[in-house]
Image (cartoon, rainbow, N blue to C red):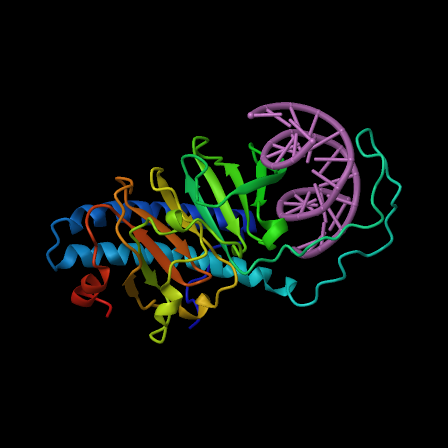
Length: 292
DNA sequence: GCAATTTGACCCCC
DNA sequence: GGGGGTCAAATTGC
């Protein structure tokens, strides 16, 4: 299904992304907070419906923007040129670099998916990371740091993450995860969340798709406000009125934060919602109230 | 001494 | 051509 709403005017990809993140943050955070409080005394009725619709609306708006961004980025794919074109000078020197290797192996930047998280500090996600770079970003106040999994060398794990201080709120950090962990993660940390996944897939979406992810396992002592992702998804076909599924993903944890937490992984097509308010049976909620 | 971080250069892609 | 992601030598910390 094609998205029926077009963005107004023409904006830059950076602007699109900013709009998206802002929409996700506002919609998801506010709605989740309200929803969480309401669910403590849950009685089937309109409030849950309104809130759920609000969440969906926010997500849909963000997705529309992401969809356009994704479309504009599509043509870059198919034919990667060889990693080295071969005509550069190899003898370049500087005060720090005296010898430049004959050639460098440069890997593709493409990743099967990504996940962006806004958090009050850099999160302990259960994986060990090694910093491999830092860059000043054009029109950005704060530099961006680049990390890769420490198991890259021994396990060939290709997961990376980028950390950058938020422009709007310097106390927050925007953390972007890219690539899947192919190394073994800490099983203790990997299973400490109470999670539900709302899938924006079709009715034929299999439960397998809703399993807890290779996404970062967040440290719930921290306030993770939102996250979003927008790569490699065919979700644009389903933006009209997403069908919702919900599934309980793991055992409850006593270490959850007091705030409801929502994360999105659009490339895999689901919304991850966490709360310590009580077990939220979203599945029944939705069955009673609306979409199912 | 080893491992992690820093930092300038290299390279890809728009 | 330039922004941004990655590499890898140099530096720093334990």
